[in-house]
Length: 274
Image (cartoon, rainbow, N blue to C red; front, side):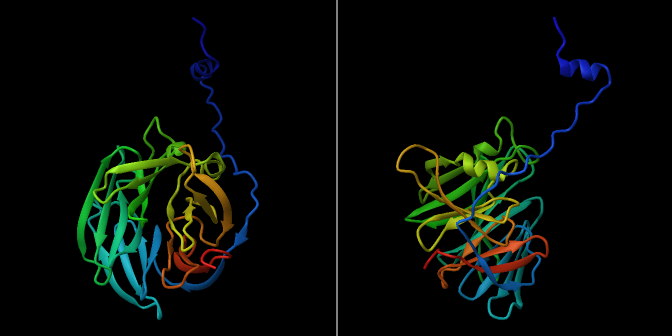
């Protein structure tokens, strides 16, 4: 039986060259956000925002800051074994609702963790169990829960799934899966080999997504047919991906983070909410 070229190289002691990462294809941005304020923080994963506060999300830690002064007001630190990766939070009906997973461990396990938005004590947990991927964000829209489940090519991934298996899921009030959608290739090419890290429904009723590394905001729509989201446009932002949140008290104001300085960024969008 003939020996493959790769096997022959291995047997001869010659190692194959490592695969170099492929740069994302060029893209035309539909607009650019303007950063109007920065908050000193230690945010590592994302940010949430409410009427009077902003929240830095960092795996097993959440810190509340006064929105006006930037002063630290409260902090929660969880057990790292129980809360290894809280990725994103959202203030929903007077509760801080957070997407949490066991990333980068596998098999992938996802939960929704709920906190008091004032003193940040942990209130309850919803276990979504195994499968689909690692939850990265959760939001409430039109009477349903919406969540994104990330999949990865390498670290934190679970074969045979890869970044192409990243999935948007709509749940009912009992967290039963109702519908789900895949990402279009135009976005998959931008986020590979990682996945979607942030997202949420904007004030204009459109769904906005961020990847893991690029300073881009992807606007998507639920398709009229088929199971793949429609990619409407891409906007430029200073935040290099990660979890985001819309300020419901200031339509068109989006909050994100920059991992370079771990600051929280308040950004005005060129079209959303206007």
